[in-house]
Image (tube, rainbow, N blue to C red):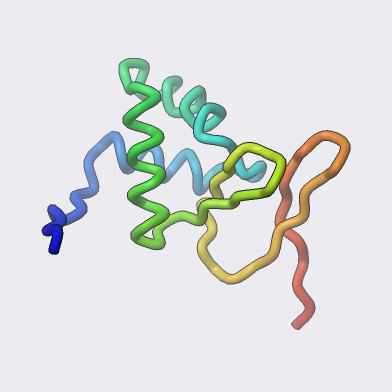
Length: 98
């Protein structure tokens, strides 16, 4: 059995989460990394990747995987659907009927 350290909300993790929650476009890790670097210029791409994976495992963010596109992330964890444009690959929230 593997023991996992408790998840501590560090400053880097907080900025990553805030940038993702502010995003409307379901960014890839690389796209989010570029945004996070505007706030934390010394953050590494590996740090962003690792923290996104950890936050997805903990249910703090959603990881969106498609068959033919890059993995994207969503800071909104409530139940909702997504649509993907076949022309440009953009991912957006899809309205769900009540």
